[in-house]
Every structure is written in structure tokens, then in C-alpha cells.
Length: 216
Length: 249
Image (cartoon, rainbow over all chains, first blue to last red; front, side, top):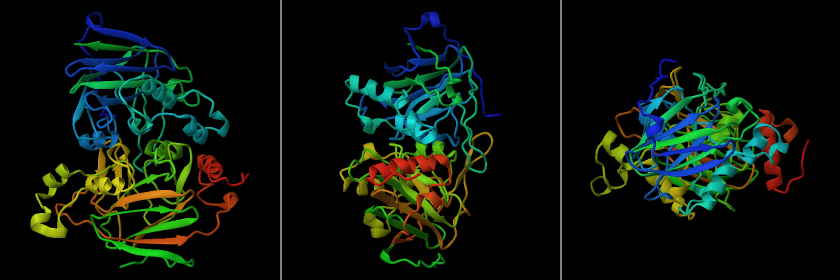
């Protein structure tokens, strides 16, 4: 796995301008301004953070794009140096530190309906990331709707592609205290679902809190 | 050249689409759409929507993670974001169709192939996948917000162990075909612009044949696609509810 580049941050949490612990299963939505650095910290380990970024200036027009990001870098996984691209071909954020080494951008978020298909038809009542996304945008004032819930990043998730075209869901490679950090290249809105999935090992069957930090 | 197999069922529509053109139609449940790569150079970028609620659309992550694959072939189903199957791949001569490459935009086409506008080149002007998608989507009151990650039929993008992505220029063949069976009424929006990772230095988008024919009746208990994976059977069960069909076991 030579593409995994572990890079530690020099930033001191004591100097962060914002710190917030997001409980398991909760959404979080926050503006990150151009030049600020944003960190997601996996407090207890193996916790997936489903994330979409929107342009603050025009949230319903410009958002994170998985296909543009992986095509621009020629690689399916995200790590230090990856530039998160928008659907308009603009850099939104650059990953500047990563102690996990690989993050997924193909698997998307869980929903009540995808849980039915993946696990069992009677799983529909279980809490899921799309519900968290929809709750957060419905309570916000950006004009976002379900139409804007596009395929997201799964920070801390390891979903390798095989040479034969398979997509495999491996146990998490994250651990307590691991983090990913990125610098905003434009003003963005970060929308995160701290994943409540209990049907697969993406959260080690035990969803736990994550911490969000922002530095100027 | 068209070497795809003869159909024993009534054909209701047949058309040829040149390279770098668009097409859309609501393919009704019970009908199949066959796409044929005439010269072995085609790329068919495709999106699917539910015509009665276009917020329901083909969802790449759900399709891929539900079937543990990044490529699509016979047996795979195309899932919506609502846990339903929209179309099933009932036949396929290639074994691999791309789901992760996306589309080109005008800047990419200009950078790769040079300026080639209508004023100088008339209808041979160069067009991007994004431009063609947007033209056709607008006709259905859809637009940029609805441009989600698409399918690229006849193209192959694969990854090495490090995740490096590669486009296979030798993948498709003259006469290659894929047959898609609509399991619910499905708005199909497609275009024939080149794949954005196509390394061909010349802009030579391939033309395709489109054939719509009536499907054999689906017997879920014995159907290849429904039984290809347990996830497919569950997605099909959700589609049966959507269609007010009787449940099956």
C-alpha cells in the first residue's frame, strides 16, 4: 500500500479557533473559510465520517465531486496531497495531514433504503447517514435539498478496488486518535454525518464520537 | 458492423446515434434497451431517473456497494438511491462497463483536442459529455444539480493495488452490445461523447445503434439478474412495490 502517505500535522489543538465533539449518529454542518484548516479526529477509532462539501458562495451549484476528484488525481483513494475537486472543476480543499492513510470516495452514504437492499428489508427503521444529512440541510438556511445530497467522502473508511473490478469493504484502518486534516481552497460548508451504521464493520459495530477542529 | 445477436422478439424502435450526440426516452417497464457499439470506439455516458419523481435517480455508490463491484456486466442491476432496481443488465458481450470515470467538460476537450468550434467545423464540432448531458437534461426540467456520477457503457477503467486508475483503450469491439431491461419506467438520458480518460489524441467519438424491444416476462424465482446476488432480489422486491406488483417469494 505504497500510496498511503502518513503525514502528521504541526497544528496544536490548543490554538484551534473551533472545537466540537460530534456524538455518534449526529450530523454536523459548519462553514470553513478559505485558508482555514479543518481536522476530523477519530476519538475512539474505526469511526466513519461521511462528508460532503458545498461552496459557501453558491451551495446549490457547486459541491464536492467524487468522479472529478479521483479522475483529476488519477487515483481512487484520498490521502495527504489529494485535492478535493468540485463538480465545476475547482479545488475545494487539499488534504494536508493524514495519520490514517486512506479514505474512501466510492461507497457513498448509508440510507434507510440502501440498508434494506444491503442487509434485509426489515432494516429500514435503523438510523442512517442520509437521514442525518437531510435533517441537517432541512434545519439550515442554504437552500440545499435532497437534490444536493451527492456521493460523499467516507473519511476513515477503507474500500479497496481490486484489479478485477471488485469493490471490497475492509475493516477500518483507523484507530483512536487518528485524524485527517485539510486546508480550504475556497469558502465551504462542511456537512458531516457521524455514521450510525450497525450492520457492517465500518464503525466496528460501535459508532463513537468524532471531534471537529478548525484553525485560522 | 453489427454482430450483436438476433432478437426473437418484436423490435419497437431502432435508431443510430452518431458520436458526440445525445438521446433520451422513458423506457417503459417490460421493455429492453440494447446499445450496440458499431465501430468498437463508442462510449455511452448514461444517467437514469424516475420520470414521476426525478429526485430518484441512478445512484453509483448504492449500485456499487450493493453488488461489491466497480464494474458492471450481465447480472448486475442499476439501483436508484431509493433502494430499487431501475434497470437490469440482461445481456452483455464485454464483461466490463465503467462506473467511476465521469464525463468530460468543455475545458478538458479543448485542452486535449484543441479548439474545434461550430463556426469553423459545422456539425463536426467537438462537444463534451457535460455539454451534451446538460442539453438533454434541460428538456426534462433537469440540469446541473441533477448531473450525478454516471455510467460509461463500453468503457473500462481499472485500478492497481495503489488505486491508480487506468483506461483500457482496447476494451470495446465492433458490434459489442449491452441489453438493459427496465424494471420500472425509467428516463434514460445518454450521450456518445468520448470517455474523459480516453487516451486517443484524436477526437473520434464512436456511433451506436439503439434498439428497443419487448422483454420476455420476468419470472423472479428464475431470473438471472434477480438471483445474481441477494441484494438484487431485495432491490427487485422494492421495485415490485413501486410498480404495485404482487410480492413474490
